[in-house]
Image (cartoon, rainbow, N blue to C red; front, side):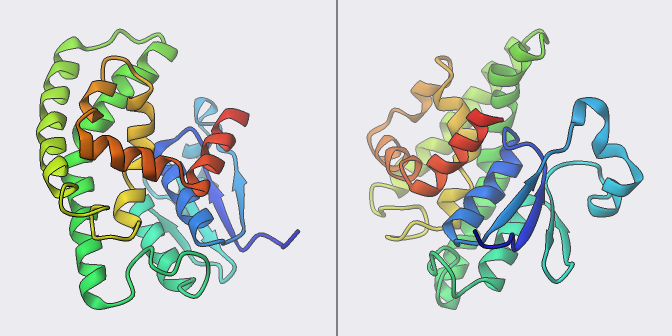
Length: 219
């Protein structure tokens, strides 16, 4: 087995960590996943704060001793640095393709992520942590996410994927949150419109994401 090229710090159940793992798998970049026990405060140790000054996951190091944090920045870096490996179209092969991917990555980060992250916490993690669910936050976030997915439904009616006819980082970035929401009866219907459902079935069936899910199940 090839030696790990990069190190990723954090639990695979984390949506941000799983985003980076999916990207690395798409790019065929060998990695070592190093657990961080957040319940024991390992993300607040001086050693970890050198990797991520805000004490969050993931943290990332490559063979050149480059340290990065924030999952979307890590994914862009991986795509650029290892451009000749794996899926070469993941972050576009020309300026226009990259710009299209970037605009949908921004849409994911600014429009999709806020309500979907709230729902992931309220519907998937709060019950496990024995925290009372905030019904008001759930209702408001479902309404916001429904409006975002209405835009996606129209876009995916004219384009196979968000940024064009090739699977890209823009699609990949949605996988972590959507994975949890599709497993939640209260949220799954939000993804039931024809084009969004077709898109989800296609992106979630990629080998890279299946491997991430396997890592989560084994954690």
